Image 1: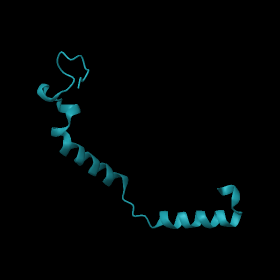
Image 2: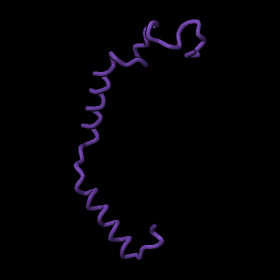
Image 3: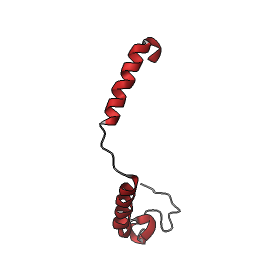
Image 4: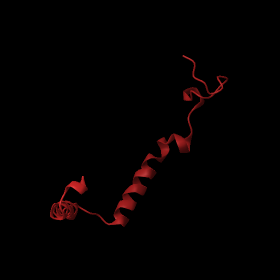
Length: 70
């Protein structure tokens, strides 16, 4: 696509993109990290990778050998 465009058209496209990026709201990394940590800690009690899956709800547990036969 860029091969079919003149240098002026490419620069105009880049300028439009930079204008969009400049107007994007930004937050400090520290604030984003704090929000992410709070979210992860809030979801921790329900996380099956941390808590584990109960045997009665685990389709791969038992004498099926991991295969689900329908």
